[in-house]
Length: 286
Image (tube, rainbow, N blue to C red; front, top):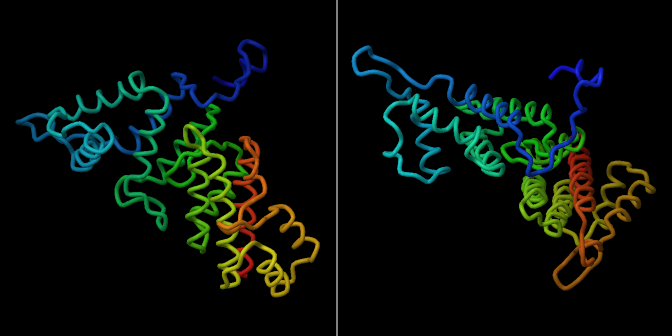
C-alpha cells in the first residue's frame, strides 16, 4: 500500500505488530525471500523423463525435510514443483507464526559464513538482508542479527548488537552478546540470564583490552582509562552504570537481585552492554 491512501485518510496508519502477529502480507514477503534466495532454480528437464531436482534445490529440500520438518527425505515428492508447492503452502497458510520465524531462521543458518558476503551457494546473508527489509516494511518486532532473530527493531540498537556479535575482534564479546540476544528474544524470554550474558560481554571486552582477568570493572577500567586517556568522570560513570557487587559466585549486577526484571531493563542492558563492549574493543584496535 502506498503512502497516498494513509495520507488522505483512506486507510489506517500501520502499527507495530505483536510477536504473535503474522498477517498475510508478512507471510507473502517472507515467502518471496525464501523463493528468490533458495528456490529460484529448482528443476532441470532432459526432455524425456520430465522435471527433476536441480542440485542446489535437492540439497536444500533434503535439509528442510530432514532437519526442519523432521520427515523422511524419501517422502519428498519426486517432482520438484510439487515439493515447492508444499513449502509454499506451509509458509503462506499452514505454519503458525513461530514456525514461520523458525523456518526463516533455519534457512538463514544454512551455510552461514561470517567472513564472506554470502555463503557458498545459498546466499544466506543476502537472504537475511531481504528478510530484514520485509520485517521492517511489515513492522514486525523481530529482526535478524547475523543468522538469529532478535526482538529488537530500532536500527541503532541493531547495529550495536550486530557489531558485537559479528564483527568484534573479541571472541568472548561475540559469544556473550549473541547468547544475551537469544535469551532476550526466547519464548518465554529469559531476561535475568540475558542480563548476565550482556554483563559477561563487558567483562570479556575489558579482558580483551587489558589481557588481565578481574572481578568487576573498577580495576580494569582504571587501567584502561590511564592507558587510553579516558576522562575520569566517564570512567566512573561506566562503573556506576553497571553497579557491580560481589558474591560467592563472582560478579553480578545489582538488578539481578530484584524479584522481577522487566523487558525494558533487559533490553537496556543488552543494547548498552553491546555498545560499551564495542567501545572498549575499539580502544585496542586504535
